[in-house]
Length: 339
Image (cartoon, rainbow, N blue to C red):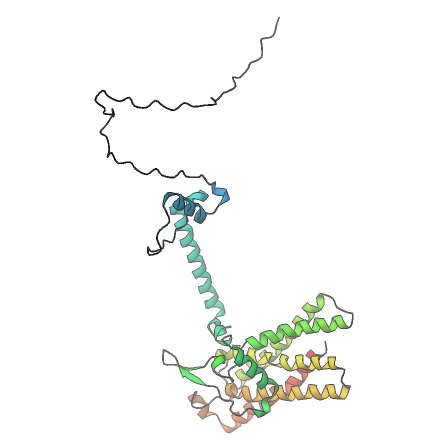
């Protein structure tokens, strides 16, 4: 029995040339025939041919701009510019879904900011961070001179101004040389880590872990110094909760003297001269903190009415606390210079 012949599917063929449709024949009187009412006889300009752009090759903004550029001629300079809206249809997303996604994203960002402000705003006042980074080039130069040479500085009181709500606030660092900032402590902190790694490389004992060890040691010193001042202010009934960022800033100025002490060791000085430089920057940093923290521990009566009720015994204890804090800088700086 013979098998049936195999099935063959027809192969589609396309004509190589598609003829143009025949033109409408004219009437004997010279009028053209129309299936409906003819439009105006004036010739309309032909629209330019649109070029198809795949959605995966461009963004919604580019896709819509190309369509508008092909459909509309360039506008004149005196006409107002039009900002195109994103064409989410090029990505396969309709306008309703896109608007819902944008609203949902805005709500999520607002909820996150509210959560951070509610849970961490009491510990770290985020609103004052911007205040402590409001510095200028002239302020940074004069502040470094003040930290390194505090002996010639006369006035240590901080300037104040009235806010829009009528409250008394301290001026920004760029307006007051005595105002603490976070720019110099942060830059000095990073520079100390880099110098520690550079010093280890000169001694042929560099390892990437030295960067982490130096950062951990420096951060531990800042935290210990901050906790000592913060707890001491709490025990002495000093309202320092709103000035926690100021305490962190004052704890970071010691890195300026530490960096200059380490750099002096590259000058091949004698050991005695090296220790003289170290003790100089220790006393300079101690005097700087002693005079700067006075506005925190012993505030001006014109700014805080509760200062007038301080008893002589409490005042002596606060001054002793300032002296102890200045003396502790010796241990902190001696630990940091030993890189």
